[in-house]
Length: 91
Ligand SMILES: [Zn+2]
Image (cartoon, rainbow, N blue to C red; front, side, top):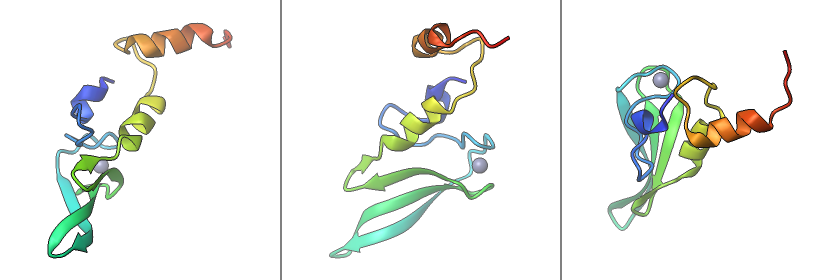
C-alpha cells in the first residue's frame, strides 16, 4: 500500500482505503456565518469516515491512522521496513 494513492500530501482523501472506492462524499458538519467550517469526508460506498476537514485544513490523523494500520507489503515505505526490522521474529 502506498499512502499517497489514498491521500494527497494535504491529507485530502483520493480514494477509500477500506474498499478502494473513489466515490468520496463530503458531509458538512459545521457552518459559520454561512461558510462551511468543518466537513466530514466519507466513502460513498462503504460509508466509513476517511477524512475530516476543518477551517481550511484536512485532519492529518486519518492519514496517520492509515499508515499505522497499513498491511505490511513488499512496496512499503522505509518507515514500515524499519518497524518490521524492530519486530521480534514471530515465525
Ligand atoms: Zn469505502
